[in-house]
Image (tube, rainbow, N blue to C red; front, side, top):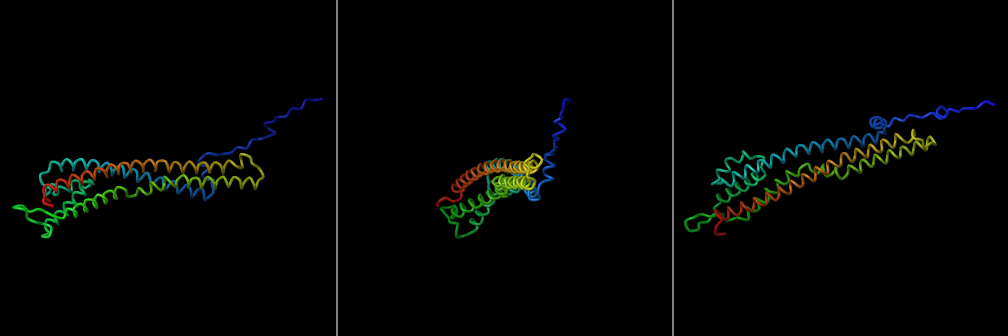
Amino acid sequence: MFPIFVNFAQAAPSVAVNTSSMDAISQASPLVQMTLVILIVLSVFCWAIGITKYISFKKISESDELFLAKFWKANSFDILFEDIDLYKDSSLAGVFKAAYLEMKKISESPLMTKVTGDKSVLTGIDNLERILNKASGNEIAKMESRLTLLATTGSTGPFIGLFGTVWGIMGSFHKIGLTGSASLAVVAPGISEALISTAVGLAAAIPAVVLYNNFISKIRKQEIALNNFNADFLNIVKRNFFQGN
């Protein structure tokens, strides 16, 4: 009797499965690839919006500080208005410009001017308040522009990625049904593309949510600054131009 030796490594050859990210994407189904393209495009747009908004808010903050310093030092609204173009990035300057032009219209209207003693005073403070509120709303709307895409990507990105995940897993089950085997070589490609779709969805959504929340916080602070400026401006003009109302 001769002993029989069996080499199990040769009897059961292994099957190499390449599941790298690039291979999984290149071998993914067209629908999953289209899903990944949509998520990548959304992510690129979100980062572009984030960079431009960051620069914009920085300019607004710096310009507001300069304008406020000039505002409280100015002895005349006319002088301040002459230099208003120096603060084109300031939201406060935009509100002041709208209010100044409205005051000019009021002062030029004989129906809104009356004489008290030896002094001419203005009426129509309600018109000025309305203009201030409208100008503030316009400034807030400018700052909120394009933020909808960040909110949309943050809320829908994971679900778009989940759609690709479900489709990839369905592909794996379909291959199992065709081959009658649930080996790693059969299910790995579908599961790999499914997980990549989930990862890309989260990678697009998480920064979008962070950027959106950050910008909304800045806008709310700017809204408070606009409201405070409106109140200060109204107090000044009521004391100096709208006496007797």
